[in-house]
Length: 131
Image 1 (cartoon, rainbow, N blue to C red):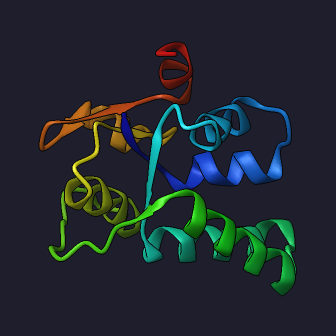
Image 2 (cartoon, rainbow, N blue to C red; image 1 turned 120 degrees about the vertical axis):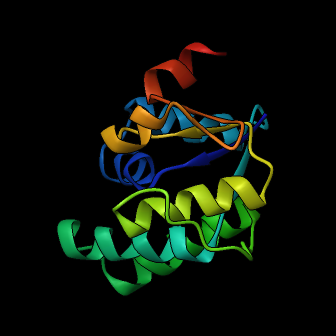
């Protein structure tokens, strides 16, 4: 299974230890899911962690390297404007370019789509229950 995690999932995984989001990330570590990431997703995550959780540059660098090595780096070539929140569109672009099976998110606007271009958009709970 190929999956893109929304930034809110990564933020929860790194900022709330031993939660469902960390469990989801461990699925990628264990090889149960192929995590797809892109530079815009990683950049948004690092900005949120720095701004809201005061992560320092060294911690942010470690996270960037960790995700780059853990996931498959996708370089979307086509811009998507399906949602009003631009960072959400970067998630759709990564999923579309990476031939993802699903997007995992807690974002209500994204979840309302249900799917995009054949890619299922599911909650963290539903993702975890699929294993």
